[in-house]
Structures are given as C-alpha cells and as structure tokens.
Image 1 (cartoon, rainbow, N blue to C red):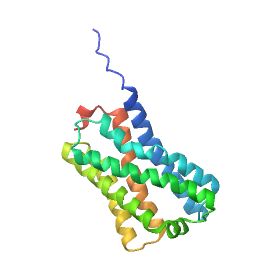
Image 2: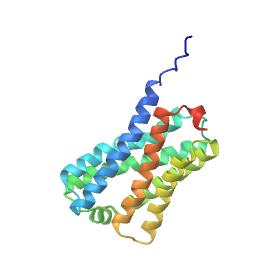
Image 3: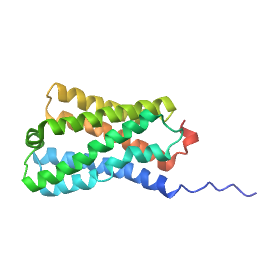
Image 4: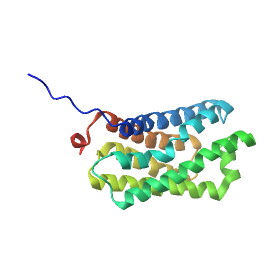
Length: 192
C-alpha cells in the first residue's frame, strides 16, 4: 500500500520559519552577552545588528505564510513592528560608530526617537498578536510574545533595571521562536 507523501514546505515558509527561530534566538544571545559583560562590545553589537536584519520582516512573513489570514489590524501591527526594528538595527550601527558603552547611554542619546520606536514595537506587536489570536493561531506562542511586549512596556514605565527588560525581551523572543517552529513543523490546519 502506498502512503500519501506530504507536500514539502514552500520556500517562503522555510525562510520565514528559519528566520523566526534564528533571529530572535541570536538577539537573546546578544542580550545575554551584554548583561554578562556589563555593557556593549563591538562583537556583541555586530551580532545584534545581524539578529536585527530579519526582524523587521518577521511579522510580515508570518502574516504572509500563516493561515488563517489575519485582519487588516494584523497587517498594520506587522508593519509598525517592522518599522521599529528597522530603526533598532540602525541603533546598533550608531552604537558601534559612536562607541556607546551601554544600553542606558544609547537610550539617553537617542531619547524620544528611541522611545517612539519602542512604542511602535509594542503597539504593533500587540495588534498583530490580538489579530492572530482572534484568527485562531496557536495561543501559547502569541501569549508569550504579547506578554514579553507588555513586560517591556511596564518595565519602561517604572524605570526598572535593564536586566528585567532583558527578561521581557527574552519572553517576546521565545514567542517568536515558537511561531517560527510552528511554521516549520506544524501544518496550519493542525494548529488552528
């Protein structure tokens, strides 16, 4: 008896899934390196830049390959999140060029513009996650992603130590990694 062979993932699914696993994982590693060394290093900042290169496209990629399709708010959220990470990639290059020693120093130099892009990241990510939850995407990756964003927002408002921001970022990144894993290894119909 012949068994039916499953269709291989389209190339876009593979690219999105791999990027959604690797980029957030590398970003979390660079945060750990920053924390361990007590600030930025040239190598850590270059790794951070490499991690940030695909980040502006991750939610748009997930929007494109995942079923069921999201509402227009999901697309708006993906775009806002992407704008934020385009800027954040630039801040890595800025920190390298200007020899900025720490995240706090970077934030104090870039001020309102950095904060505005942080707000775009949070609002965009929450719009995307809310739309994906309503569409029936897998809950736990979206809840991790959204709770990491909410944690980052809350810790910014109370001016908590940077290490706590790293926990929020790691939670957000774990949600992205789980979404990438789902794209790679779980058919959309199996996870709805």
